[in-house]
Length: 235
Image 1 (cartoon, one colour):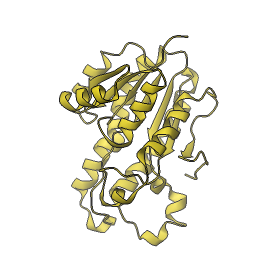
Image 2 (cartoon, helix red, strand yellow):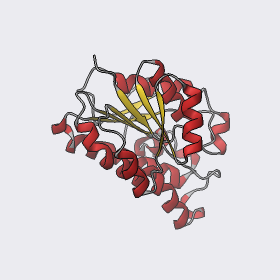
Image 3 (cartoon, helix red, strand yellow):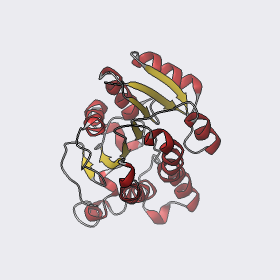
Image 4 (cartoon, helix red, strand yellow):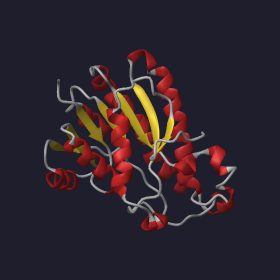
């Protein structure tokens, strides 16, 4: 069986690095995506196995295009790169510039990377795209059990709602190419994402869920929003 090839964006730290590590440990060739060469090289060296550094700034179309030229075939794309303001402010306390910055990475970056790597994904026999989303991006939960948080982290949560919409639309439009596209909610994890993340759980647990989804032999699962514990989440 041909060795599978994966790309994880934002893989120099946090959940992304753990996803890259676990994919490499599973025997895949893994491109460790990061905005800078130093961080990509450091993370790839730490992961070991067949981990390869790849400079890819998801907010820079030229950087993404250059990275895509280096990958001929891609079996798994994990859109993990994401940002969030440290403070958990509601919409009325965040300005438009903050929303633009968050959406630039969390939404527009996903579009830029996905579109650039589609030719490589189309050359795969079992292409998969996993978008790292958030349960806080669920509109059903936002108007239900999460309503108590009064719209906190508005720009981040809105960006993940938009990412979920992209997941559905890409899943529909790429079905003819056999490319499965799904969103994964990793749960709150100990990362540098924002102030709330400091009290989260083990990033490796969330990474394991992403790896299971990426390596699933069931290519009928597409256009889904899945929690880290494999439960289906409402949009």
